[in-house]
Structures are given as structure tokens and as C-alpha cells.
Length: 305
Image (cartoon, rainbow, N blue to C red; front, side, top):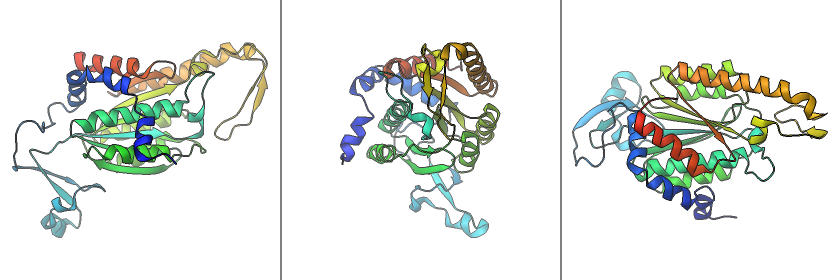
């Protein structure tokens, strides 16, 4: 069985981290830019000045609970201080069966998405911000609550390593559930192939936005799904409950590409119309290229594509 350190290395490529390290300031601006100035830098000096209350989230330090508010409202709130970060990155990683797909010579969508999640967690934690992870399919399968310790990366990669890809997906339902759990004003990064009804997906994303979350959608797809390159009689194995199909792909290609293109475009436009970042990630694109492109554009423009 792999050790915790080995699990961490499975999802973190030193070459990718090196490339992103060169964009450290820009990537930092990209993350902080979502907060519109709300983030308090841990490098500005020590302070114990009280800043605000926020609702308790599992994993918060119990020493900061405000018992006076609990006595009045019967609800748990924690005190926040100026030296503390206001930035939490919550990663929602799809672990449904369709994420197991891998075209010839490519990594699976799940592995690619897991590397995206682990890399973003690493970047946030190295700046002493908080990272959390939710593994999702039809339901919330596993929740690693937010923490700021560098060692928290091991908890995140351990949870990824234990994931089982065997169920259907319902991101819309899970996103609405997560909207009730996450602290306000956090960054939520959804890493998924989004094989679900676009209207339900967009409804879930809007639920996050109404909770004052800054949302990024990383739409992870294989080249085969985008280009449908098959040219011989092919058996297409059904995923997430669909039966296998033997068909001539040449007869299907045009209709497939049209329907799939409409599906993706509806998601993209729906995200952008609600102020949600949408980023297509192809599994045949080197991860450092994909993330560097996104973060550098975010840092330079501070705008959404």
C-alpha cells in the first residue's frame, strides 16, 4: 500500500509545480482577485484585532467558538481575526464512473482532474490559505474540511487515492447541497466532466453563487469525447447505467459532435452569464500548460472567459 508521501507525489508533478512557481505572484493575484480585496494577507504583520464572525464549519478550531453568540442563538459561530486568512478554496472533484474513461495513450479524466485538484490545493496551502476537498458523484461521498496546515495536502491526496469510481453523477444536486455547507466568500473549484443535464448543473452552480461563492468550473474531457475520432465498427461501453452499444461511428459522428457541442456550449454560456469561470481542460493538454494559461490570464486581466 502506498505511503502518504507516495500518494501525494502521485498527484503532484514537480515539473508542473516548477512552471507554476514562476507564476507565483500572478497565480496569487488570481486567487486573491476573486476576493475583491476581502483577503487579508498573512504577510502584513501580526495582529489579534477582531474582524468578524462566521458560521462554524466542521474542521474549524474549536478554540475560536463564540459561546456568547451560541447562548443567544443556539448556533455555532467562530471569531475571525485580521491576521487570519479569509480565503478558503473548496475543491469539488467528480468521482463518478464516467471519470474513469481514458482514450488510447491518455490518462483518465479522473487522474487528470485529481492532479488539478492536488496542484491547486498545494498552491493555496503554500500561501497559508485554507483548502478543502469534496468527492462527489450522486451524493457527497467524502468531505475533507478546510485547513491551512501544509500537512493537510496529505489528507487531501489520501482521500483522492481512496476514491471509488462506480456510481452515476448528479452534480446539480451535490452543488446545491454544498452551497449549504461551505463558508461564504470562498472559492469553489468544480472539477468534473459534467455528464449531466446542463440545466441541473447550472442550477447547482447558481446556488453556490447566491451564497457569495466565487466559482470556477474545470470541465475535464478526453480528446475522444471532443473529436470522436473512431472510424471502425466500435463497441461503446455504457457508463453510469447505460447499456453497451455496437455501432458504425461514421454514421454517428456528425450527430454526436453536434449534440455534444451544444451540451458543452450551453454549460459554457450558462457559466459566463452568471459570472462563473469556465475552463475546458483536455486530458491530452499538459497540466502545466493548462493551469499556467488559466492562471496567467486570470492574473493579468482579472476577467472571466
